[in-house]
Image (tube, rainbow, N blue to C red):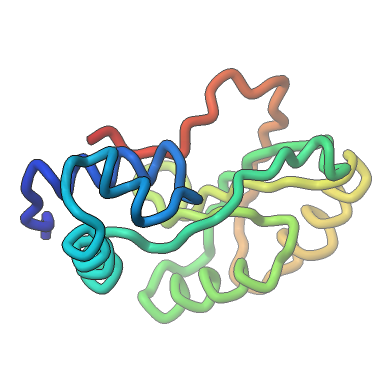
Length: 154
C-alpha cells in the first residue's frame, strides 16, 4: 500500500536521502517550513514506516571486504515454512549482506561480501550448500560496482 504523501513530505524524503545527518532546523529550511511541523512530519514518516531508519554508507573495500558476489539459491522444498526457515537462516550468515525471495529460476538471491575468495568459498561449501533445504547454488563474482545509489526515486 502506497503512503499518502504531499509535496512537503516528498521534499523531506528527498533531502533526508541526500543527507540524513542534517539537523531538523536545516531540514526545515531546505523544505520551506518551520522546525516544529517539520519534526512532526519526519516522526509521522518514521512511525508510518516510510522512513525505515538512518545509517552510514560504508566503503566495504576499505574495511577489508574485497569480494562481492551474488548467489542464486534453489531450495528442495518451497513451502511457506521452508521459505521462512531459510530466510531466517540468512540472518545468521554474516557473509550475506542482503537476501531476497525470488520468483523464477531461483528461490533466493543473496548479496554477499567477503574478505577474500577463500572466505567466500568456505561459506558456499561449508554453510550454504550444507543447509538441509538447499538444492542448487549458482554463484556470480562481481568485477566492479558501477552504480551505488541506495535511494528511492522520489
